[in-house]
Amino acid sequence: MLTRKIVIGEGMDAVKEVANRYGAGYYSPWKKYLKKQNLQMKLKRNERWIKDEIKKGSEFLDIGIDPQKRERSQFYKMEKRVIREKKYQKIKPIKRPVL
Image (tube, rainbow, N blue to C red; front, side, top):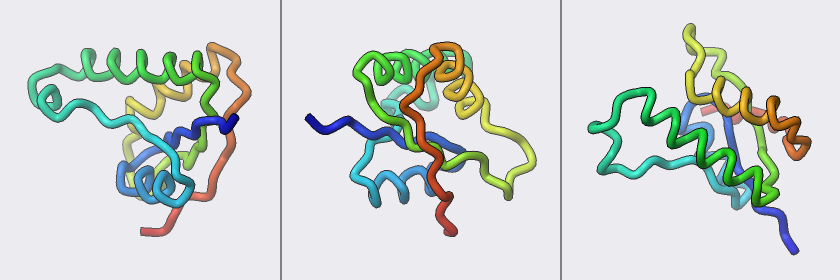
């Protein structure tokens, strides 16, 4: 059975590029909720999704931080925290694409 692959990292353009390359998934919030929810609700929804992917045994492909940004993504920080707290081992660093 194939293991589902999930891409995490900063910058959705880079995440989508790597996801397409590897046939992997990535977190995509429901469009109708993007503007209505506050940041904490968005983070909670993303956190629940990451935990669900861990339960499914998905492998995370991590493209890391976006060196062009001065401020770190709260979503990426949360994803890394959850993976670390769960002591989840199926995480693989992937070279970040140049866009």
